[in-house]
Length: 251
Image (cartoon, rainbow, N blue to C red; front, top):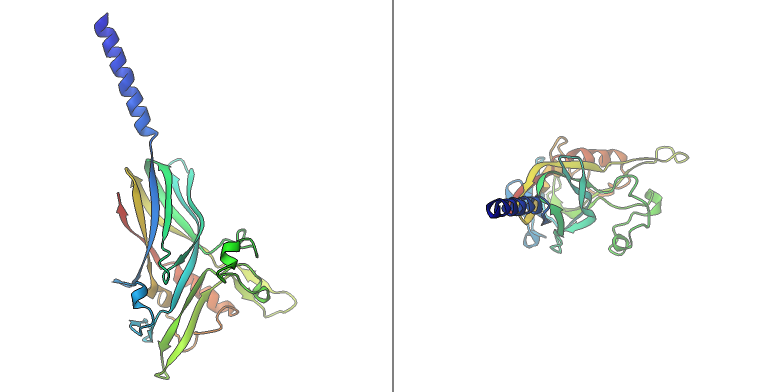
C-alpha cells in the first residue's frame, strides 16, 4: 500500500511539474538594427557621404526615424500576443529597443505594420508623437508620418543637395473638391520562431532597399517635397516591403 501511495504521489508531482512548465511564460524584447546592405549603420555614420544607391547617388544620413505598430506574436491557435501597440524607432537617438513583454513558451509567427493602419492613423490621437513633430499638417489630411529619412546626396550636379524621404498616407489632390487618400502602410511578416527561454528578437532594416526594389529610386528626380506627391508615396510603400527581415534570436 505504501509503495502504491508513493508511486501515486510521484506521478502527481510529475504531472504537476509538466503542466507548470507548459504554462510558463518568458520575457520577449525586440531590438531594431540597421544596415546598408551588409554594412552595419549606427549614429556614428551620420553626416558622412558614404552610402551609394543603386542609381549611383552618394548620400549621407542625417535623420532616420520610423513608426512600427501592431507588433505581435501569433501562436499556433491564431492567438495574438501584443509586444507593442506602436513604437517610434529613432536611429539617431539610439531608440531601438521595445521593452520586454511576458509571453508563454511556444511556437509563433512574428509580424508588425510599418506606419499606422488607416483605423489607427487618426489625427491628434498620440500626444507623444505630436510632441516630437511626427504628426502631419491638416492640409495633407492630418494623421502621422510612417518615416522621416533625411540627408544629403551627390547626384548629377556633383554638389551636395538635401533629400527628405518622408513616408505618409498617400494624398491625391488632383481634384481639390474630392481629395482622396490611400493607405500606404503595410504588414511585415517575419516568419516562425520558437520561444524556449527569455528572448531578444532582432529586426533588421536594410536602408539601401528603400532605393532599389522594385523601383530604382532616382534622387535627382525625387528628393524633396515628397509628402504631397501621391505617386512617390505609392513607390515608397512598394520599396518598403523588402526592407525588413528578422535577424538573431538571443535566448
